[in-house]
Length: 136
Length: 144
Picture 1 (cartoon, rainbow over the protein chains, first blue to last red):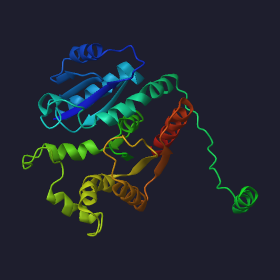
Picture 2 (tube, helix red, strand yellow):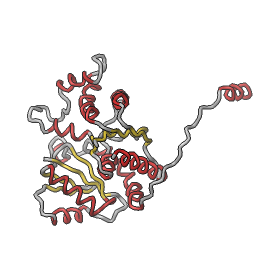
Picture 3 (spheres, rainbow over the protein chains, first blue to last red):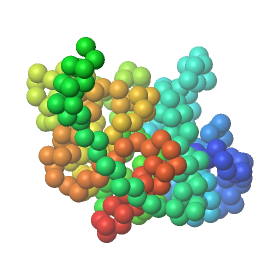
Picture 4 (tube, one colour):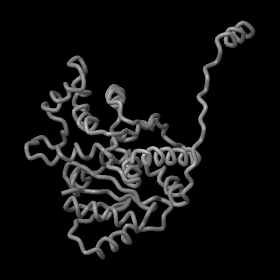
């Protein structure tokens, strides 16, 4: 068994229900959960991997995916049994979620440009000494 | 090729590695093995005393047990790695990467392995994101 998370980029008009409908139309035996950030899919390893490839082909850069360690509704992670509060791992999701619209745009438009970053050199000791003598 | 990602729980890195045709070595793989293990009798605990002993392969006995426990999870992934992508300066809330010593040792172990490695800074604006993806794409395509 394998579980995968599918996170929809904030700027996309895609809804979790659209993704669920598409997955259901593929006719595979899977356990799917609708969440606030997208969906979670659980099933046999090869079925889940196959679904991931198809979802990526269909929705391209609107959706991002990662392997999730815990099964859906696992008591150690699920908020329903933990008495509320953010689930462990939520902070990471929140942090990456902010970056998804930018990544999604870049991937869609194929804007792959590298920037030449010049490392900032530390200030010369003589300049520092001179500044100290002048101002102190 | 199997690409170790750092931070090992990053969804963005995992997704990009898969998108560009490689297998990411992410933390979920190791945690999944542990949480589905029927021997685990204390549910919220992912790390057991066995892991702390396994961690001795990657860190000395003087190293705190918490670091060794974490390395017992990252270590097998590093052993499998054929390439690595390291992202530096990521936000402090970025997953469970809060143990600074484990982070240092993880990067040290990757560098010791001498596999092709790409080091990047966590992007904060659109220009940096373009650069971030372009470098990852170039690196991963070069591995083929």
